[in-house]
Each structure stands twice: as structure tokens, then as C-alpha cells.
Amino acid sequence: MLWLGGFHALDLTTSTPDALCPPLEETRAAVKARVGEVRGDYRAEFALIRDNSGQSALELVLREREREVLRRELPLDDAGCDDAAQAIALVLERFFDAIERRPEAAAPQEEQSKSVAPTASQVATSTPASPPPPAPVALASEHVWQARAGFVYDLKLGLGATLGGAYYPTALRLAPNVRIGVALDVAPFVTRWVETVREERIAAATLQTALSLPITVQLSRWSLAAGPWAELRLQRADAPGLEHERVAYRVLPGFGGFAQVGWALSPRWSVGAGVALGAQLSKAAPRFVLLRDGEPRNEVLVPGSWLGQGQVLLAFSP
View 1 (cartoon, rainbow, N blue to C red):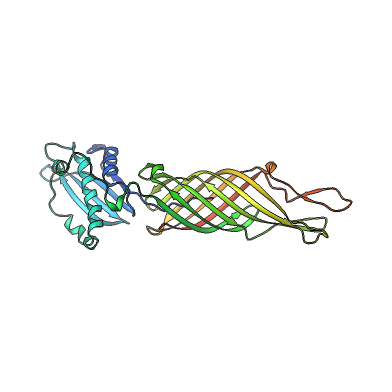
View 2 (view 1 turned 30 degrees about the horizontal axis):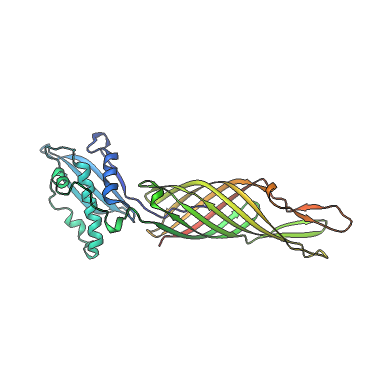
């Protein structure tokens, strides 16, 4: 029913947005073209600074889970900010490329990054005009799968266990930190829906399947998701006290929307909680009717026209 965010995007910000050196959106576009998608909790920030002599420079800092892993200072020459966005993108591309090629060299990366840097225009013009393919750790075409399990509580049906999965294709990526996914969840309810009519006890067991299309925004470790979902409830009703008991089945369709908040415990594990509200198409489903000799027909276990649920989940992204 609900989606749980488990991916991370390279979050790029600037502490000097009014300087427009370089413009933030232009820099994000350049980084996206070169770096692609990053698996991990990384946040980059750049700023326009001036030394005691009045010389301008760009300071780039990259952090992973609040730990600084890269710091570069790019002096600005006569070209000014013209090539600054490409320079930032190239520095980040080389960093992630180095992690993939030489994992054993990741520890001294921070010390190496503090060495004297070339100017922004030298960095930008030292590469071919056509952008190279993304580094292996940041494949833009990477598909993300997720498995999750948890508990759901329905206002009518009570408590149930839920198990499901989700798929987040890059083709449905709207921005570096905005995606659309497809999720499917199955929830057998632990409690039975019980009703007593004229001293006869009728009970129904419910199995719910739900398909959702989450639109998700990733904000560092936090994720916010909302979107439409559709569900089918398979119910099996029986009345053991009847002399001629017959088991009855029906399928209840419904649709609505959901909202959820998630928190990443690590690059692979995350937790989330959310709610869903919707309409139940009870008139489109068969009815459960109690039949006894010499008595009128009694409709039992009448479904409501709306439904509400809450859910908590633990998710794993392989």
C-alpha cells in the first residue's frame, strides 16, 4: 500500500546563492550530466570566497553522512565563473570514479584533495568537449529494487502483517532527488471481521493486495512520498453454527491516496510510517447473506463506503 524511500541522491547546495558564481541550477545540471546517480548519503556544497589579497576562488566541500570526505579550492582566473560549473562537476566525477577504481585508496582521499588545485577554467578545459560516461558507482541507468515488511492497521479490519516490494526505474526520475516508483504489497489480516446476527456468529478472513505509484522526494536521510493506490480485498466468510453452513467468497475493490515519511538507517536499510485513505466500491462487490428456513434474507458483513489505514515498514534495498 505504501512506499518507503531507500535511495539517496547527491544533494548539491551553495552557501553563496546571490553571487551566481556559478548559478546553482546550472551547476546541478552539469553534475547530473557527469556524475549521474550516486548510491549513498552524499551532500556537496560550494561557496564563492576571497582571500586576503582579494583573489576570488570557489571552495567545494563533499560530505558523506556529515563526515567531510573532500575539500577543494578552485581559484578563479580571468575566465571568472564561466567554467566554474563544469569544474565542480569534473572534481566530483573524478572523486566517485576514484572510489570505484581504487577502493583501498578511499581513506587518504581527503588528504589528497587538500593539495593545490588548478583554476576552474584549467580544470574545465582539460577534458574533451563531449562528456564521458558516468562512473560505475553512479550509473544513471541503474534500476533500484526494494523489499519491505511491516504491519498495517485498518479501522475496520484491525491488525495485519504486510510484505511487498517496489521498483524505481531511472526512466521515471523527475529530478536528482525526485522519483516515481511502482510498488506492490500483500497483507493478510490477523484479526477476523466478526458479526453476530440472531445469535449466529459470522466471521470473515481478509487478504489485501495493493498497487501504488509513489511520487517521492529524497531530502538527505529523509524521504517524503505520496501518490495514488488501488487495492483488492479477498474475503472468505463462514458461519460454523449454521446447520447447512456454506463458505462464501467475495472481492472488494477500492482506490485512494497515501502519504508517508521515511528515514534511512543506512544506505540499504530504512524505516517508514504512513497513512492511506480511500473509497471502497462496495456496490460493485457480491454480498454476504444469511439464509435460514422461514426467515427473511439478512445481509451481513456490509462493507463501508470508505476505508482508512496506517502502516509501519522496514525496507531493504539490495
